[in-house]
Length: 71
Image (cartoon, rainbow, N blue to C red; front, side, top):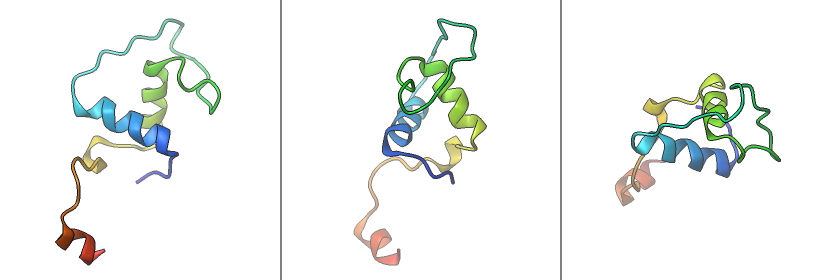
């Protein structure tokens, strides 16, 4: 897993939930930082992937009470 902020965690989860077709309005080299992260979804998703976030690690839905007790 990758340590991220809640905003990036939610963005990555939403981008993996269904088919997305993000397009970069610039040359696919936007600066993605805390201030500019919402300007280009394409480059933000590419940065998530480059940092090691993976679809396989995304958990959808809630954990059951039994699952929470194990943790």
